[in-house]
Image (cartoon, rainbow, N blue to C red; front, side, top):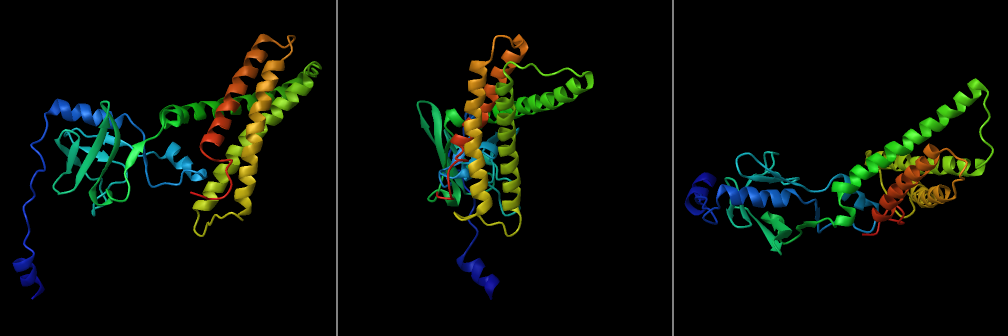
Length: 276
């Protein structure tokens, strides 16, 4: 009875293209324009540390060899990414489906896209260039690598001086200690956030305003910003008696610390609570 009802009153309609299609060159050009942008959902937490997701997991559009595109996270019932084919300029239709994806263009640049069943709920817009993952994520990785290298060299230097029984230079000793302490705080803040996110992701991990570990890692983030300023002060105040390599190294470490502090500020790691 159910099968006969579906056959009579819910017949399968043929899938029709929503547009005449575009030539291959236009499809490649538009796909490349979408792929060259790091996108973020308009439905997101933007005033808490959850903004960090846009740095490490932005939404990307991927051109395919067959002329279609895929969008991160947009999957079909089979668990595979949906493929979209451009049927009109800046309008894509789901491959073997009726879903549509449309892009808003301003001054020749894509500035928004949405489609499918979620079009009335949220869409995607570009992440601002000043905190785009395209440059900020590599800069953070390089900065952390340089800070780690500096820490390793400092520890190694202690053992080398002890082995050869060479005392550390007396001039600028306070600056060196401040530099070492600041590097420790910066690396410690990163380790603290990694540990917190890992604990929060575990089953039963809950965050709230009264979450003690959350308040602790946010406090450490504030200290990391202060530590970055301290590294800059050390680079400015470095005595002339320091070897040129050490003075240049002080500036490299200071710039690395500023990158970490910039991430802490722009990704809301120093904000309190979980407000949206």
